[in-house]
Image (tube, rainbow over all chains, first blue to last red; front, side):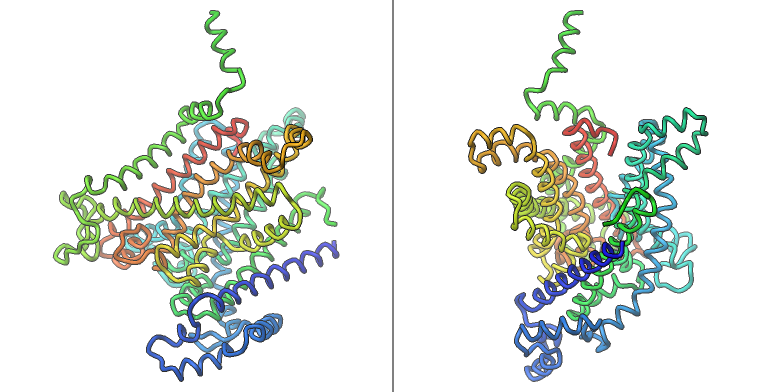
Length: 306
Length: 296
């Protein structure tokens, strides 16, 4: 187990380093002078030159790379071109908001998606199944930004129940969390349904029914537990995506998380922050994936790591 | 009686034509038919746009801004007095072309990568898979967004960015089907008989790996439309005044308090288009692989 974990952690580090070097090279090798872009069209040649020195862009590429990787290992992602703060600190300040939103919407999505998928599997081919399929189709086809706007229209503008933007108070969490949860819920329900359908046809389920277990116990205790492995994978993937992927929802609701920081940094041409965020997203995604893999052992004792 | 028995025998016979069989199953699936109808309507809306509306999608009329639906403007007007229906109809052209070109990029690059990876294995496979892993450590949207951030905004860059972000899924899919087809005994037999591997690849492996690729390409049209419209919504996609659904939504969102129809209708158009491709893709999957029917 320990050696497995160690091996996987090395894998995570390699992936992140690979992502970091790729982004580093792309920022520097693509056409356009980053210093000129950051300084703006109106800046004088001297100002651009000074900025270039300050950002270290006048060094040869290999030296920039060595410095970059050295800083990265120490957790230093450079300095934001927009605010002159450390990128690590900027990201750290925004992370709690993103985490709060991701946790809330994942919990919501699991709480609705798993029962919905199970219900559809038990009633496979009949109208409840069709209804769930329709909900799933809507969920995976819905543009999140549009759903968010429509929820604002109904609940903030017309009913005046919930705030339309910002992150003050717990009520402000409701609309963005619901918006994000809709897609994940659909995805989780779909996987739960297909996984349950497979399990419900297995022998041990028939045995459980034959020995007189109540249908409820068979479905929720025996079958669901065995159907969970793929469901947990999807939940993990969704959570990982939400940690870095709530870009559109955060923009719609003016939620001060990492997604909006990314969009704002792109518009401000703040390359150090964009670069730092991309690296952090890759790290978060890899760590979530690792956690999911470790979690398999908890759900299914047959899984051994070696 | 005998005829009926013959009919059943006919049906049980291994099909002479995969295409005709698939088509018959597709026509029997309500979701596939609905999806196909939606997609066909979109194509018609885009091609017949000039006949369906008298309005010019980019002509502004500042005396008629932010109007609600009326007889002359069935879906109302936007913040610059442009007819929303006209913009949605002309926008269908753009949405469908962006989707089709981006998915083609994914196909043209991703499929050969997957084939090489799965058929020839070896060091090349390792390198390709590591690169695909790298790309898959981001969500499709984040990958596309980062690429646009680095390449710059505009129609071509959006298509390139969205297209690149679909590559890993095609490569993975094709690799895994080629890997399993490679193990089938008739492939082994043709290789043993001395057929050159290139010929085996083109004649036997590729045609058999095609079905899941068709399904994936259809479903990718839906997700690609979502991604491209998302970029447009952020203002990082197709630039104004081009009538692009995502950009319409993004610009209209500032007027949601005064005239909600400016955001409602473009969003509905995106939603409908994605539903169409998802239904068609699901229907195709069921039709091409009857064993999976109802088990997704």
